[in-house]
Length: 228
Image 1 (cartoon, rainbow, N blue to C red):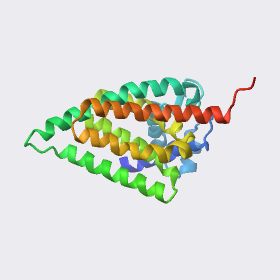
Image 2: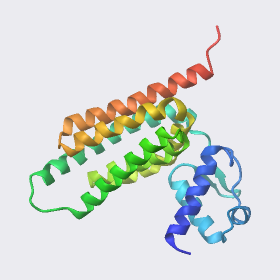
Image 3: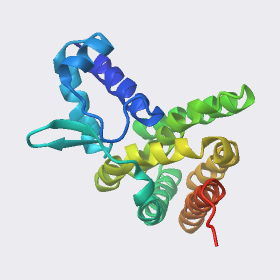
Image 4: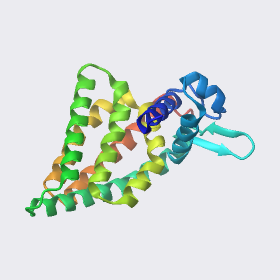
């Protein structure tokens, strides 16, 4: 089975966890999952390992794999981590852009990533225009990963990957409220990076994540108001 097929299986399981098909705490048995997704156990096993690295699955010594708890309890910490990590990522990407802008040497990988980001942004615009808001969670994570890759930092990419599953999960919980508002902000982020404006790129990214944080907690407050 190809790597792309294995990634597809992982993406399907990830989507089902985020959608609640596999509830927090539910056991993820390889045999049952292989039957459900019509594949062998090998890609299921690899997918579970990948999802564990993203924080969506937990491995228990005697009970196997289970769906991780909802990231709601970790939301504040996750947003604070993102503010620090992703502002640094955007700043580093802008620094690289400035160096490339001043150089006569083309960077093929940079061009590939910028093309990918443009396609992601266009896909998000189309999803909003057609009210396919459910597509935004995956597209949002793809954008932030691509920015991390622009930074050229393997450490930043690795750290973001460790929390990516929970980020996507939280994003999906507030999708209707924040998604259409957040999407145009991505173009402001990439514009600052392209211009090589390190401080602005970091500032715009941090503001973007803070707005997502504030929107998320406002949504939670509306759904679970305190009683006096």
